[in-house]
Image (cartoon, rainbow, N blue to C red):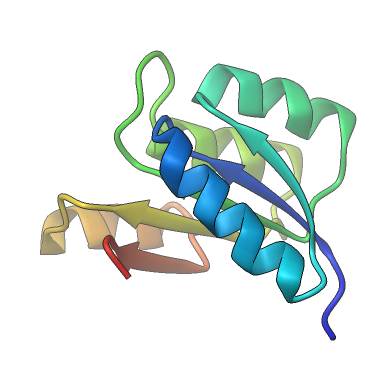
Length: 106
């Protein structure tokens, strides 16, 4: 069984619930934020082994969240998810320091 603390950031509550269940079953501790601003607040208070974030969200999008997380901890692992994938976006998030870029649905 794995261990670690994961922050899931997505405005789709059903996806957050499914990812939480799957990752909890694998032994991970999970926290969820439904927008980028809330996620920044959690990142300021907690350490995470991985942040899993959607790109398109209201207020603060996933790319901005990735940059905020990397400002606070350059070694922070951030996986960016999107249902609207394209090569340019993938290159942009990888240049910004994403650990990986995943197309939804998975």
